[in-house]
Structures are given as C-alpha cells and as structure tokens.
Image (cartoon, rainbow, N blue to C red; front, side, top):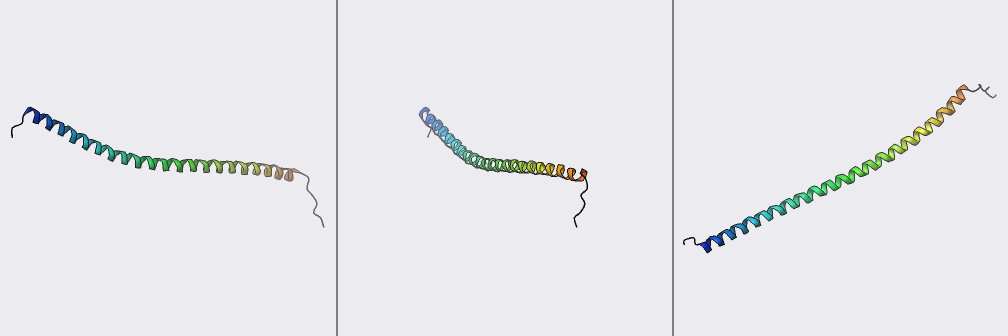
Length: 89
C-alpha cells in the first residue's frame, strides 16, 4: 500500500500521539519520585526542627545550671573569706 498524503498525515498524528503518551507516562514516574523525595525531605525537616527544639531546651537548662553554680560559688567565697567559726562542743 503506497503512502499517500492522507496516510502520511494519519501516520504523523499517530506518531505524535504515541510520543506524547510515552512522555506523559514518564512524567508520572517522575511525579512519583518527586513525591517520595518530598516525603523524605518533610521527615528530615521534622527531625531537624525537633532536634533544634531539644538543643534549645538543653541550652536553657545549662544556663540555669550555670546561674545556680555562680550563686553557690559566691556563697562559698563568702564562707572562705569570712571569720573562722569555733566548732561547738
């Protein structure tokens, strides 16, 4: 069967349709991959935020502990420099 102009037009149309279908199928594959990557990034973001909150909490606890140590140190210095007390008994 010889290729006539109408046959060539139909063949071109079918070829374009097949290529478009294959191209869209590949996009769906990439969409799935991007969705998986985005899900993992969201999980990592949640972990990082949780770690940052834990670090901030630990930092605040350390600052409070340092303040208590400073208070104790000043009291110890007062006792060391003050007059000696005679033991009872």
